[in-house]
Length: 330
Image 1: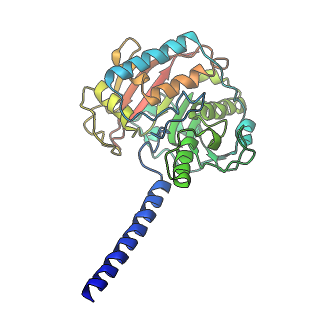
Image 2 (image 1 turned 135 degrees about the horizontal axis):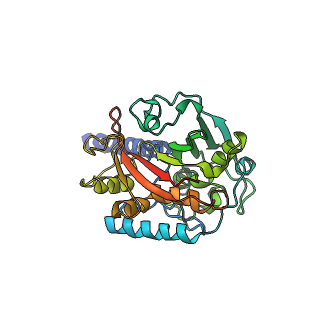
């Protein structure tokens, strides 16, 4: 009798444990990670989509210093030579791909943008004239694979300040990230071809440019006025480690939020020019390549733009890792 009860109890325990593990894995798969939380860059399964080669190709978890330099030199060579222009240029095209556009009314001057000793103040950028605009991929869409594809839930939330000639990347989740997680749950395996599940307009650089250009048109300016591109609260490990090495520190072994107290780069931080190895390495990170594609694939609208310097910095009040890409004047 004891043996039977013990066997029954053991079976029940195994069953309950299995259910708990299944539920836990489902919750985890559906919960946005803090890894890459604000910067729009995530490590996800590699896609075989033909043009999936710009700021979304972020499946590599490791990047050595030399690999970063080599990647930076390659993207800088592309910037110099020119490349294929993006076909996406209007807000209507975003809407046709299931994106909704709204304004985030949350007060963002609580961040370093509005602090007296932050970069906005020293660069003479007035934070009150910027608009925090949210693009959410929350409507079913069609692509070349299907006329009715489920929305991905992708979200790009950024500050566009035309008067200050500034874009700040604040809170970005790629449609590809959500599509990969969803399909992994549905198909019980990692999906390497995401093309059937993502809209034609999905890259951060494309969505950012469309919304930047739209804000410029509304305010009687040209997109070429863009001067500063900030990456706020970088937590993607591959970029953080290149930032740390550029600052003379050892890389981290795991993802951590903030933790920039040992970076010793409180604004104005550490600035690197194009002739430095640090500049090339930072350009070889996902964040550097994303800014490069913002320019490269929109040369018709920003013909004179190049990257003049890259600044690695923290602030005295939040110790987050931040990047500033300063572009050349018109």
